[in-house]
Amino acid sequence: MTNVDNRRFRLLPFDLNTAELVALSFVVCLGGFAVAAATQDRAAAPDGSRMILVPGGAFAMGDVFAEGEDDEQPVHQVTVASFYLADAEVSVGQFRRFVGETGYRTSAEGPLNRAAQDSLIRIGMNPELSREQRIAAYDASLEFGGCGWWDPDRRRFDFDEHLNWANLRFEQTDEHPAVCLSWDDAASYANWVSGLQGLPPAYDVESGMLLDAEGNATTDITKVRGYRLPTEAEWEFAAREGGRVVRFGNGTDVARWGDAAFDAGVGDYSYLERGPQRRGTAPIRSHSPNALGLFDVAGNAWEWVSDFLAPYPQDSQVNPYQTVGRGRAVRGGRWGGDAFELRIAKRFQWQSNNRCDASGFRLARSWKR
Image (cartoon, rainbow, N blue to C red; front, top):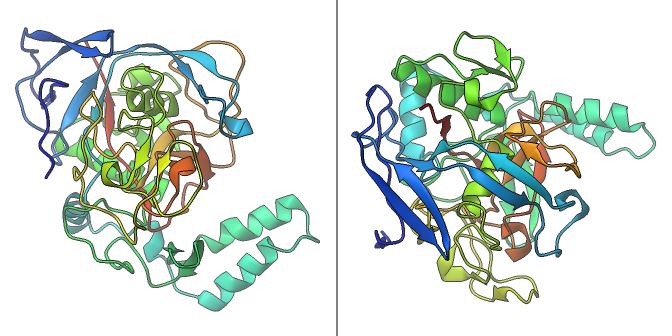
């Protein structure tokens, strides 16, 4: 376990069953950027996640280094309200408890029919068909069981109908991040955690809509009371340590093998120090956190966020939440990805029931005064 320098950040333990805030504030200095935060009097969310208060603010969202892809532009001004974010990705042990208590079956544990699935995938790859036909066929293939897996030798994804969060091609302990999870799985888990604390669910998982405290659909993230996934804007704000101009979510501008769980053995980037190849996830909290106390924001598991991936606007935004798109946004890099993928600004989109052996998540929650 990495020794954490508590002078750089303060873990904000809490249990929101507790109604009162402890009247204690402190200031975290992030290279000249100062933010105030408040702490509460319990250690964890009901599932054991350690929640950190991320004080809100404004920042430049997008590819501030101008070195990425088109969907990372334009850089635009975004303001986010204060929110809580788990210091680590949900672990295998935490997810195991969820499954044990609820009997939940993940998207990867669907019906097995590899022949039908392969047929649909072939249709989805047929260039003679329309884009809509190909998308429909591929989406239908995801209704069957199994999980995508990364072949580190061939550096490509393949599919295995027998893989799921509890059965991977590399070894994991209860301290590793739970992967092979879809957005649907992550939202279902978040609702379960809300129920443990007597909070209303944050999601209607079937429709994919956010829910406010009264159970009504909402696009206002501040009205959601249950545990949820961070929005894409919240995730990037926290990865940037409260909005700093920094390349990676661990607070560095150079990708090093010992600082994050990614494949340092490939790529020729000015911001990469080459190192060994990764062949699986690392235990959560294995690497140093960023200045907010967040572990593995750079690498290890891709992290589902709450909203859909949509083109960035030119105009400024306040608490943006995207409700339209083909796929949900995935952020943060992964154990098999290179330094380019590891960048904070890198964006991916996946169907809500898609999954691979690098797809995981961490919890968030709106802050209420």
